[in-house]
Length: 412
Image (cartoon, rainbow, N blue to C red; front, side, top):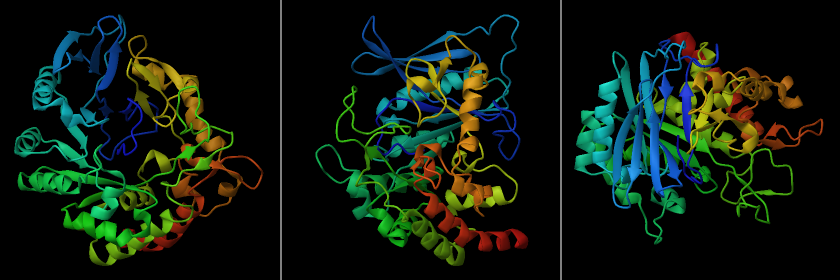
């Protein structure tokens, strides 16, 4: 959920029952996450943001000073029933959403109320926390937003990669923003990007998050690869399926470090904070052990978390926004049809079919499934580049934590 090194303008689009058996939440509800997406209008040189709901397209126009909000009705294709959801979840994520201003969100809330019918609306906002003030806190509380505040640990860790363009620290602003959320009773969590700096100090990071008031944490490992020569797009960071000469960047988590990071936090959490602090990484493992569905990273297949791009293009995954993985465009094809295209089904099945030979006999495969395909670039024993960069880390984490987790489950 955290775009620490955000380089694109795409958003996650999740419909939890699009592919049969893939994604259903614990309550069996049908949900869709449909965040705003920027679209450049080449005719009048304005930027538009669109949100498509079952009954309306919400259009946001930038006039150079402020964002403006418009709507137009959408008519379902003749003979095709409209999608029926019990709940619609809006994930406002990508760039820094608070730059849009409260007025923008107030109008969006009015449109949600207008078109929601008997559906339940949930809103999630991802922010770096630097622009939160009392007005924002009141608004977020009034509309029951869940807020994700990016924080990479203490001042030392957060300042390693989250400085202003002028090179100034943002740490105090983030802490003050989180304090405001607490004061106004706004629910929030803290996505933390685990990188080369903070992976060395797991308990410092954990305690810093607790001191800041976080009780819902998520630890996301960072690994990026880079070539020595820029491609046609001018970028040196490469696509997941790149097979040429490259290296893992110096800011990425070093090999065999992430597993130890999680285990240190797990041991402390188990003794001191079980039931008081909730760590997404641990919660998802427990969910899988009890027959539930964890994150797509540890699922057997993928393809259920598609991405909506700036112009309405849909891709199979936010890590694979490249021409070969384009499914189509929502202005031309229904999202359910796009998700169930043979191309996307094959993309999802490829996670299972292209698993490394080491995984086939691995004892933790049922809760790991080879990790995210984005990170499968190491050479496996049979010479194929499909072994996960975090293979040793996942095995270290699961081998260490599963005995205690199984005991917890027996005691519940």
